[in-house]
Image (cartoon, helix red, strand yellow):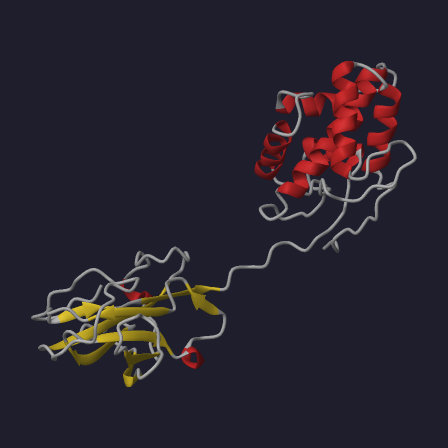
Length: 297
């Protein structure tokens, strides 16, 4: 908040505070302002430091004669100011002179907002001036949130996931990212209970028996779903969305998620293990789905 001489700052107003009749008389002269800032973490709070103010932004004020918080009817344009340094050299401040008991609506001139910034507080603020000598009406602006990851369908095989656990230069995920993927995978199934379970079953030999073989393919299947779920928080995009359409002669399931549930149920019941192995293997290899992998660096 601004620090100014001989004025009592009050809490920033973030909503319309009074709806009533048009005041019958004007009150005392007052100042209204005062701050437009760069909201680095997009949380709407002024916790970004004294140098986070933004200069050169025009703040427009309208007289709101019916005190309803919107510009309509006989409401009219009142005044404006551009944000600039305050008396202490801090950027982002503005001042408007008005009279208490009048209602106003304040907003930013969108053409003066820097490219790429969006509102993190209300873009339009309506209020009635109290009998204070100063009232704060502040606006926060932050970066445009990044778009969600583009949709993709990019399953990876047992060999890929074995390499992730092995680590080294060929690994696509950092140790922390792999830990997060495994933690997500453990929430998806009851077949595995620890990080070590995934590493163990991915590395078993093909002659270990039908249950072990099914679990090996299912481990990769589960990691594919988990990796997709975390695709917005890891650098390498791979995996499968549960809603991905599936057309496979091995199952009547219409989606990858339904096939996952079927394979899991077979493994937990110890039945149809050959089908469970073949179905998980097919999906891990992209059979029966339209594979669309992101471009690799």
